[in-house]
Image 1 (tube, rainbow, N blue to C red):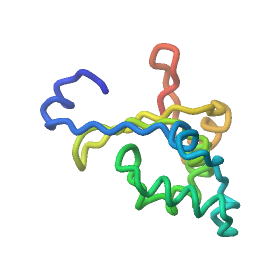
Image 2 (image 1 turned 45 degrees about the vertical axis):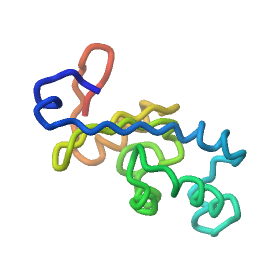
Image 3 (image 1 turned 30 degrees about the horizontal axis):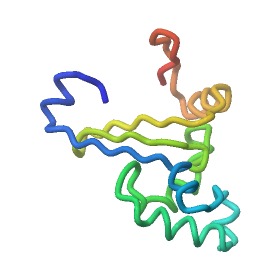
Length: 125
């Protein structure tokens, strides 16, 4: 979580989730969007396990994340291994960790009219 005046002034709420750890603890596999589209047993079990998680991204929005996320941001929901959320609406920050492909992310954001800028070693869109 950034140590900035804006974060502290918002009475920060912090939430962290490790989705791969959840799967390991429950002994389940990482599903795919196709698992959810086809309502497989893998999707059902993951949804039951993930539904008990009250950290990270709000799980009530999971189905929205599955539809169009890859086209919008260059990676899919199940590419996210961990999520840190902080702040209060309408000023929420999200930090995502996973094995993301920088070229796919760049292409998705450029397709939506964003321009990348260097912030140290990181491209910010």
